[in-house]
Image 1 (cartoon, one colour):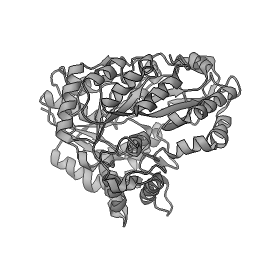
Image 2 (cartoon, rainbow, N blue to C red):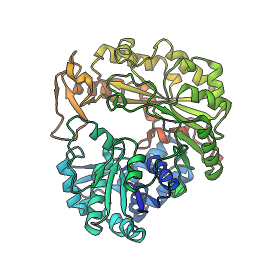
Image 3 (tube, rainbow, N blue to C red):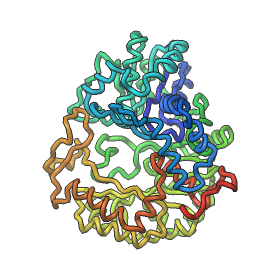
Image 4 (cartoon, helix red, strand yellow):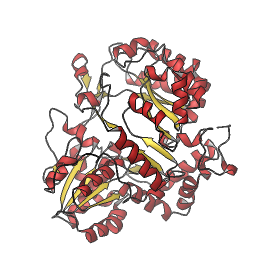
Length: 509
């Protein structure tokens, strides 16, 4: 039976283990395929950081929780770690705990990715690849290496790794998969630019393709649960182990305009409730996590109701749509009793007209009541806002700002984002578009806004109006830099299971 190694490359937020390769490993192992996991993101970052005078001190402060004494102390800790990752002397790249950028190469240009594979020595992770990762691969002797690409922040580092592997092990088959690869391959003009460098690219869930490559049998039921045992679960940068979990794949709504799920044709599939419950119980007993992070695009209402009757047994958070079931104070109280400490909510806009045109399926009149019920129940809210959509005008953006101001006391965190138009969404037919830059793998395009509400103007509004208002600025200051929502729960007044009393976050934050 062929041996498989699955790798999660840099750079992603190193707060919790990668669920994708952990799930694939579970599928392969159940079918008798020998499979090993490497979180090259965590290993690469932690090899760079302890090499400095203070790197281990600051990473230890995050793991022990002492960095969470106050938001100012936390921000300083993260800033110092980023300074270690990108020293002040000149580099053609910038590396942080959550991002990697090269000044001359962009991850949406296939020629730049191939060039990176030809010159891996100018990547900040080259020393780790050569001295740490590759010797481990040599001892494991895999026949297939699967590399999981989820975000653009990983692409250049992943291709540097591919270049290293090709130099030392030209006979090993390399397979690329993950959300970013799926998005690239969903484009109607997709032509594989990596042929000869990569043996196969896989779109969508990778179980069937990997099992076919290894000539193993089909995946059976109950394989949705990731297996984190092969990963160093206690070394991630969080104060306690954060357990990623899933209850479904895809999005159950799938009607929003400009939605990648709809454009890429991904189907919604809820996992059996009993399998989810037993899998969670097993992982909670095995790992004693400080927090469970549900990765669903939106946890389905039936699943939320299931949690109220069968609590996960540990504090948890995840995405939810602003649905009628949350407009019930008793239901919100029951959610909190089940362990829910925070919900991520995609409001997008405080304008009813924009929500209707985007087909969000959200009643704006209901949202203030939902925010009130959640606040009264003790559940924090992490609100996502989207500015600059084709449906929005400057007046609509001001309505969003005013909505936030009216309900600021019930909003825990805000993520204000600038809208990017998906390159191949059906809605582009009605807009005049232009490229951001010359990138054959670009996922987004610029466009002529129908109301003249262009990106530069929107960005100026966010910086000088929305973000400058003192009430909104205080909310924005609460958002943990780099780690964002993954560390937000550790600053909540009602969630302190890990931090010793002497270092509990103060209310000054």
